[in-house]
Image (cartoon, rainbow over the protein chains, first blue to last red):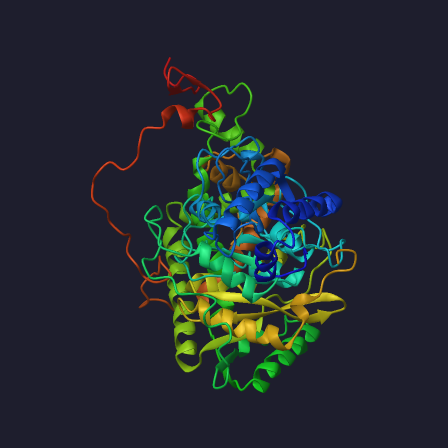
Length: 483
Length: 95
C-alpha cells in the first residue's frame, strides 16, 4: 500500500481496503526499519496515530478531502505547535513552536496525517543535507551518496517510501535538486503562491514552499492544499487558486518548449545531457515543438544569488540572540557575550559563513558594490526569462550538473558545493515556478528534468509533467531494498 | 579582493557571531573565494538598471492600523531561556 499514489490510497481508504491507522502504521514501521537513512529529526508517532483515527472517522462522514487520512511528512522548517521545530540547527534543538505555519494549518484542515519532521540542511543552507545538526541524510539509491539539499530528508523519505508525500522549501534549488538526486517529483511554486508564515526564513525574497511527491498527480493534490492567499504573509499573492488536477490530462500537441543553450554548458555531465535530450525527444513525440533559446546572464546567477541570499540570511538570522527562544550559552558575562556566544556555539560552519558574507555585503562602504549590484543583476536575469518565455511556453533542461555525489565529496570547498545549484538558482531570482521530474538514470542514479514556466503556471507545469509520467515509468521506480 | 583575518574578526563582531580563533584563517580564505566569485558581476554594465528587490516588483501590501494580535505573553515566554515576572532576563546592561 505504501507504493500507491495518493489518489489510489484515498480510494482504498474510502473502499475500506485498509484504514488510515493501518496505512500510517505501515509508514511508521518503515521509518523505524530504515532509520539509518536519517530522514526524520522527529517522528510524531502518537500524534500521527491520533490524527489517523480522526481521519478514519471523517472518511465515513463524506466530508473528507483528497488528503484525509494520507500520511505526509513535513520539512522541519515549518513551525508545528507544541512539536519540536529545529530547522536542522542546534540553535532550535530545544524549540517547540508556539504556533502552526499556515502550510501546517492547511494540511491539518485537509485531514492529512503528519508522520513527523524531516531532516534538512541547517536553516536550509546547503545542497547535500550535510550541514544538518542532526547528521547527514543518506540517498536510498546509494546510501554512500547525498540526497541533495536542503530538503534532503524530504526527498530521501519519499524515494524510500517512508511517507506518501512530503513538503520542501526552495530558496535556490532546495526542492528541485534533492528531488532530482532522489528520483522524485518536486515543485517550486511561483514566489508568493504558498504562504511563508511560520516557515522559518532564510532569504525572504527567494524562499518558497512546495510539494515533494512520487508523481505530478500527487504533487497537484498537495499543491491544492498548500497554495493560497494568506493575510499573515505580507508577500503572499492575492490571486485565485486554480484546480491543479483539472488540466493534468490536457494533450501537449502544440506545446512550445524552449531549450536554453546555457543549460548545456561544459559543466554538465555528458550522460546527464543525453538523458535530458532523450526526455525532450519524448515531448517531441507527444507533439511539442522545440526551440533553442538563450539566457545570456545566467552565468551571473550564482554570484548574484550568494550576495542576495547571504545578505537576507544575515538579517533574518539576527533574531536568534539567545533571549526569547532557542539556544542560550551558559553564564553570559554581559549582553554582548550572550549574543556572541549563543550564536557562536549554536550555528554551524555553513550558516556562519553565510552570516559573515551577508554582513560584509551589507556593511557601510560595500552595500552598493555588492548588494545593489546583485539586485541589478537580478533584474537582468529576470528579464532574460521574460524574453525567453515570451517565445515559448516552458523551458526545459537539467536540474543538477551531476547525479548524487558521495558524502563528504564537496564539504571542504563551499564554492564547489554552490555550483551544484547552477541550473536552479536563476529561477528563484526571477521568482518563477519550476519542477524536477524523474527522467532516467546515469550509473543507477536518478536524473531529474527541470521544467520552468511563467508566473502562476503551476497547473500547466503539472500537466506537462503528468503527461510525461503517462508514457514513462521513471517516477515509479524504487531503490533496491526499499521496494 | 581578499579579506584579512582582522577584517573577518570585525565582520564577526558586527554580526555578534562568535567564531573560533582556529577557524579564522579558513573563513578568511572561504570569504575571499566567495568575493572573487562575486566580482564576476562587475564585468556587466548595470548603470541604467533599476535594482530588483521583489521577484515580481510588488510593493508590500498595507493593512489598516488596527490591533489584530492578541496578547500571548505567557505562551511565548514559556519557551524563553530565562524570564521573571513577565520579563525576558539578560545580563545587566547598566551598573
